[in-house]
Structure formats: C-alpha cells, structure tokens
Amino acid sequence: MKKYLLFRITRAVPLVILISILIFSLLHIAPGGPVGIFSKSPRMTEEDVVRAKENLGLNRPLPVQYLRWFKSTFLQLDFGKSYITGRPVSEMIIERLPATLELMGTAFIIAVLASLLFGIISALNRGRFADQLFSVISVAGMSIPVFWFGLMAILVFSIKFGVLPSAGRVSVGETFSLKDHLSHLVLPASVLAFAYFSMWSQYIREGFIEALSGSFIQTAKAKGLRREKVIFKHAMRNALLPTVAAVSMRVSTLFTGAVITETVFSWPGMGRLFYEGLQRHDYTRVLGIVVIASLCIIIFNIIGDFICVILDPRSQTGMKKSYSADRNP
Image: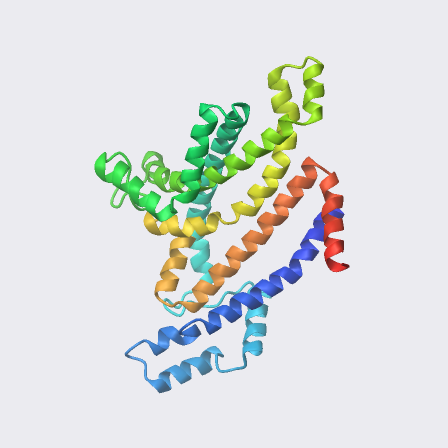
C-alpha cells in the first residue's frame, strides 16, 4: 500500500510541473497580462509601467520568470504580493480558506448523504414512480446553472418568505451566534450541494443496479440472507467502488462551484477572493489561487485512487498496468 501511494505521488510530480507551465503561460498571454492593472491606471505613465515591469522582473524572458516563480511558489511556498493591496497572497488565502472549506465541506456532506439515500431508493425501485421522480430531479439539478438556482433560492427564501439571510457569513452589526451563522450557511451550502447530489446520486444508482444484478447477490439471496444484509453488506461494497472513483474526480470541482456560489451569496471565501482578483486584474492573487485549486484537484484524485485500492486491492494492479501501458505502448 505504501509503495502504491509513493507510486501515485511520483506520478503526480510531472503533472504538477506541466500544469504550472500551462497556468503561468496562459495568464501571461491573457489580455492585459501581468501588467494590465498598471497600464489601465490613468495615474500611471508609460515610464511608470516600464519601471514597474523592471521592479517585478516582468521584463525578463518568460522561461526565466517561470523558473523564479516556480522556485518561489513550490519550494519556498511564497505566492508573492498582491498588486492591489500589497499584502502577501498566501496571507490573503489563509484568511479566506476556512470559509471556503466550511462551505465546501458542508455541501459535500449534504450531497453525499442525499446521493446515498436517493441513489439507493432509485435503484431498489427501478422503473417505478420514485425512480422516475428522482431521475427528473437529478436531470434538473445537472441542467440548472448554479448562479440561477442561487438567485431563485434568494428570491424565494430570503425575499418572498424572509426565513433565511441572503448574503454574508454572519449578520452585520450583531453578536456572533451559532444559530445566526448556520442560518447564513444553509442557502449557499444547499445550492452548491444540489448540483453535485444530482450527479452523484446517478452514479450510486447505476452502481447499485449493476451490483444487484451480480451473481454473488443471487448466491447471497439463495443462502436465505436478509434483504437488508444483502443490500448493505454485499451490494454496497461493490456499488461504492466505481462511485468513489467518480466522486473523487468530481469533488475537486466543488471549488469551481464555490466560486460562483460565494459570489452569488457574498460568502467571504477563496472563491469570492478569486472573483475579486479577476475583476481588479490582480495577477499574483489569481495565479496563487489557481495553483492552489489545481493542487487540490490532484490531491483529491490521489485520495480517491487510494480509497479505491482500500475498497478493492485488485484495482491497484489494474491502475499500475494501465500506467505501464501508457508509458510502453
């Protein structure tokens, strides 16, 4: 198991380098580039822009800039300073990270629990009314844009009925209380969870339908085992394996959904920090957050593969063979 974990981490290193090159290059060739904020300022003359490029090392060849940035970011964990505020980007990210983790974690728990419940019920009632109803809800969840669903949730629960706050993490001007904090969390977490619940419940449904049709399930039934034991002991283990792999691939995109959700609900997390950085052309801030998001995606994928190996050690051999085949076609 340790060798496999080391194998996956080693395999991720060239991927991190490739992604870092792509991110750095794309942000440099984007309209405006790193000096967009300076060139658009009416108070900056052309000489000021040239001086700023020299001071920031932006007049050097792109490969040299990349190597300096890579060394600073990955070896010294220094993401540089914000062009707007002058504060270290790592400090700004650390300030906003707890709010984003809270939102993503709550949405993840809601989505997983709801997916398990609705996915299993759909599989056990395949073709019946409950299955068809949940399928319609899932399709709606995958089709409706997160920002539109968030705006409708605000319109109904905040403006129409006034039962839940529409913005922020706590009420402005009031003493902090857990009840007030949770009331602010309900809408953004539910909206973010709904999109992922719609996808994951379908994975679980398909996994359970395939597992329930397996010969080992028929054998278990023939032995006279109780229905609950057949479902939760024999079918669930086999159904969860492909589901965990699919969820681990998708869970990293929670950050992307969090960017939109935090913007709609004015949630003070990394997503909103990223959106503000884009609006203000804060190059170092955007670059730092994109790097963190990319690393999270890679880490989540490794964790997902590792969980798959724990659930079914045979997948370890298959993954290694697949990797060897890729390298030696």
